[in-house]
Image 1: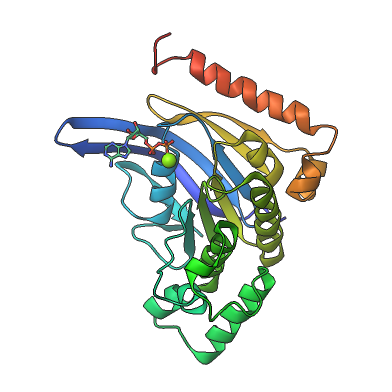
Image 2 (image 1 turned 120 degrees about the vertical axis):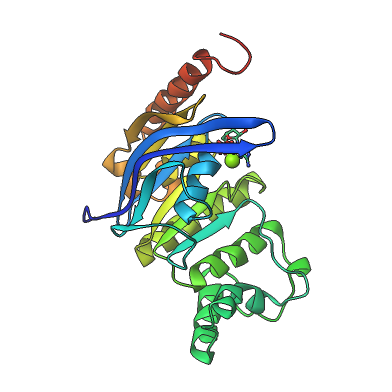
Amino acid sequence: MTHVPVLELQQLSHVYVNEKGASLAVEKIELSVSRGEFISLVGPSGCGKTTVLSLLAGLFLPTKGQVLLNGKRVTHPTSKVGYMLQQDYLFPWRTIRDNAAIGLEISGRKTEKALEDVDRLLTELGLPGSGHRYPYELSGGMRQRVALARTLATEPEVLLLDEPFSALDLHIKLQLEDLVFQTLKRLGKTAVLVTHDLAEAAAMSDRVIVLGRNPGHIRCELEMPEDIRLATPMVARKLPGFQDIFERLWAELDAVDDEGGGTGG
Ligand code: ADP
Ligand code: MG
């Protein structure tokens, strides 16, 4: 991995303003993500994970600070950044192929060649010959594969993944972790995953960022040991050092809880 920063979060702070007043959601987030790196954001509910992803996606501007993508300030959504969510948001009236191609369609890039690439992507993601089927014919895990194909079809450099596996049954989730890991590594994509699942974060990532709350901030970062980084998630979970990493992450989250702000303390 070369250490060219693809994403830079510089002193990122965000205040939400609504009829109830103003609230500081995240404060002074400083983070740099290298090309091809896979990082995870973990932390308690409300610590600003989705806010950070939204800022990375350019959905709105930070109140202070900035996000740089390849050295350029992010001010609006672009096709260089793909977003995958817990819900797949497939359109029920569209075929799998037409769902996977929707980003291409919106950006005016739906050529025959691009559609062939979509078919290849669906095959690579374990859905060969499914292009003509409809979402209701597919299981939850298959639907998330379509959502992944849709995200990858526009060839983003960076993938933002907000709890994409959390609605799935455990063994499907583990399979999909492996598939996403291997696909993103093969394509050399940079990824930012948000997850509640510490084992998932440890198994998939090069680096895990633990956020604290009130306001959301970076509490600490944990670089995964090389053997865990290089192994696929399924294998990584079985490595000798894995339990130790898991326990360290667990302890950091416990410490966030002890800092209070929620139910007391
Ligand atoms: P997480 O994804 O870690 O659960 P969020 O980024 O969703 O956290 O939220 C961070 C903080 O910002 C929370 O206190 C939440 O209540 C607040 N927040 C999130 N979205 C909005 C919004 N649209 N308006 C006002 N406050 C918001
Ligand atoms: Mg969230």
